[in-house]
Image (cartoon, rainbow, N blue to C red; front, side, top):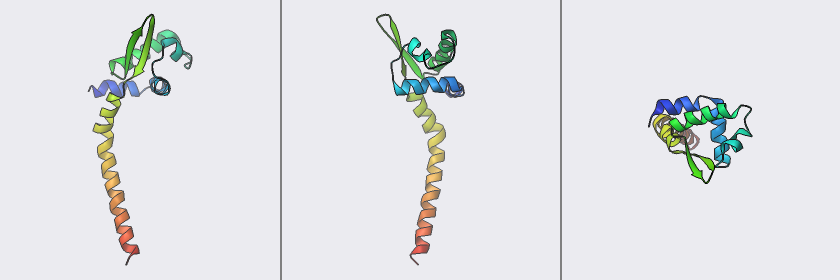
Length: 107
């Protein structure tokens, strides 16, 4: 995983919106995606290119249409590397606190 490209891609609100749009309806054309954005097709294409470079979007040609699909694998890798370990510690602390509080209630 190239984490720098993923974080760069996720750092922009327009690119996050594109991912949200593809999450809601996967396999959209550039025109369909542009309907929900207040920018030119060229600007949208540049954002899609950054998402593709981060492997967050893949494209498939179907006839004359180029469809864009979300690829959740890099997001999962970011979660596993950067979120999960912190979540585990927090949940362990909450579990220990719960046990301690329950122990005090039973005495």
